[in-house]
Length: 142
Image (tube, rainbow, N blue to C red):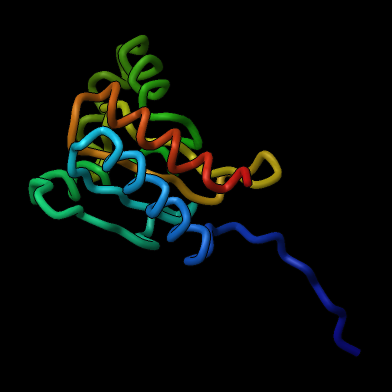
């Protein structure tokens, strides 16, 4: 007899990623700044991405690294920056980790207090990137 085992979702769905990206695009448009918005799953793998017309090619790579770092740590990249810069060993080692970013604009996406993915935004100042990322994640609170 086979027993049914239920596993909680550990990844942001494509539908949720599209909601996040669309909210990020809307927030970016309200600022009049073209940006890139990237959503990754809990393992840091790309789920969905958008580079708005007029956004630099570089913004998509930076947004991915912000999302990856946030997914891997389960924390906003600004908080990761504070932690890394407070620890001498981390200051030496973390810059050598592929895809690692300490730039604000990456936020975890959580479900039931568990990180299931993250969003990264790039294209403006870190303050504006973070503002757009917050608007993007807020789209899932509806």
